[in-house]
Image 1 (tube, rainbow, N blue to C red):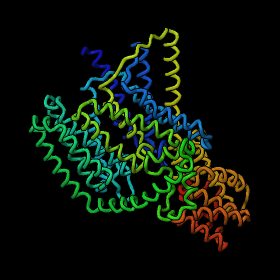
Image 2 (tube, rainbow, N blue to C red):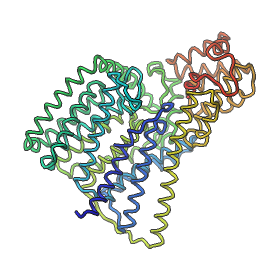
Image 3 (cartoon, rainbow, N blue to C red):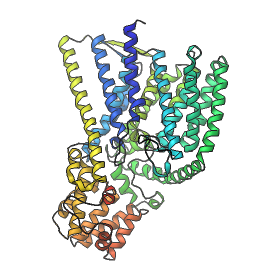
Image 4 (cartoon, one colour):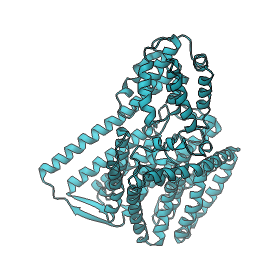
Length: 592
């Protein structure tokens, strides 16, 4: 390979690495949540857009497009989602847009990876980068567990939870167990024996750090992935391991050290996580049961994209086991198949099954050794999607999973000659640049919006100026409206005025019909009661009590309204004197 091609390969490898290796290290305070409310997800998408735009340039430059053999079958997944979306009227057009964008963006990223024609060594270098990232995340986690916050870059977490920068324990665990398996895969690759010993050292440290942190976390999802995937890699690559006994013995020794360090560091934390997982597993039984019942209400084309939260929470009202699901609001049934069964119906599931069958065929045609290895690498994140919602909590896991899926399909590809005219080529190039720039600007704007929302919660005395950016952001506008109108409602109650309360009621009635958030429901009932409409307040809270029977804030507000203590109890929790720009941050944080 000449130097120009080497530089090109390095550039493309670096861009791909930025998506799910470097971007998750971006740290910024945020109000919390999922999706773009997790700051680093914005940077994940920015780098993914750069990768996709670069792929378009490759197609224009080379006048050909590289496609996996089963690309049409893979395309069945986004096509089926789009079709199911068109068969239903969406009451949440913004959420519909972002959901479709997420799916199409993932598919385009998957196709983009084929355009770079990366050699095996380049792909392995990306995976070595993943191992290095896992080491860094593991070290950050060990500092969190030990309470060593010697730099502001290490985020402080509740109870020193081992989450690194991922903001969710099991997302972190899935990332680490995937890196652990990748380390075994790289150690057993034919090129490993020819690599510099520093690469060996990297793999050894990866095994030590990821194992110790995974023991500390005690994630049952990661444990299942370890039990299923590790033997598959060892059995399928046993000959390769035996041909490199020095590295193999070093990895065994590293695994033992990791287990010992993790057992020492956990100090009972893993047991706590296991207890929490047990409680969640008990709740999932009822979540899955109710989800199946909701699916049967619209089995063919589903309830519509973005409809899950509304239809599921409303179904809880008449469900006899609602009190056993915990007090939280569910935006996902903790199972990806059930989620798309409810939102997209059988039409969406057919698309998923077609893509799944195509991938299974691609795996089988690789022979049992490669089949077992690739299956083992894909399993942790794939399994995680069946018990939680990792792709919504971390876009990095979404693109990492797509890259591993690309490795499966990269062995059987075909080339289509494009033969585009100069005019069409220029049009596509300019359009790609404009679209990419627009999307990247939106995600950058979102990071600024997050900062503004966070500043508003931390420093409410600065007034509404911190909400200006979020108020002009398509993704955060509802949250900004919530903060603004909730503040004005609290001000009305504190000062005894009724200027903004009707506006809050008008907004909250529409918002809670699609997003039945407990804090907003509580505030809506409070606003009704404050304006003297006790009947509406009682109706709202009694319905909410059936929807959230295990939520103390709901039952407490209902009791307060029934006993005519709602305003009295509320005013005791807020300042009795507020000016036009001030409201209690604790109340606002609950207004999310």
